Image (cartoon, rainbow, N blue to C red; front, side):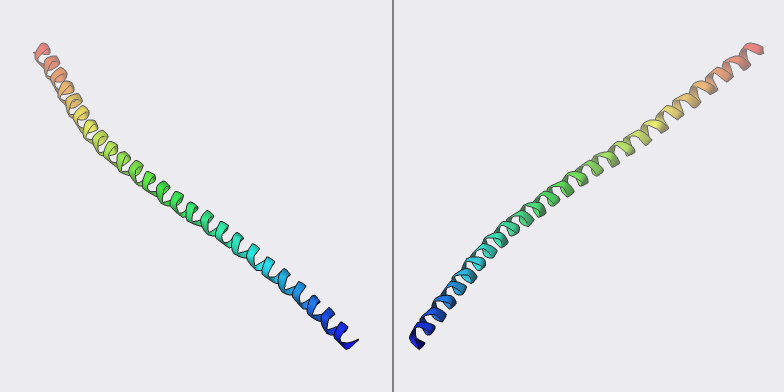
Amino acid sequence: MEADGLDSQQASNLQRFEKIETSLGEMQAKQLKFSGWFSSLGQQVQATEASIQGIQYTLNTHQTDLQGLHHEVKNVSDQVGQAVHNALQNHKA
């Protein structure tokens, strides 16, 4: 009878170990899946960051160009204004 009890206990222990092994295998598979997700997410974040830096560089370049254009337009406008003013002054004289 004691042998039956030991066999039963060993069978029970074996089932528990098999469940533990199965659970560990599932946990390892999920861990690999999550590692892949996070690695992919990290790569996507880096790509997005690089794109944002490229856009920021382009915007800064355009801003510099627009500032230069603004100064050119202002200078031409001032010159035209001065020319019109001079023409009116000469016409009155």
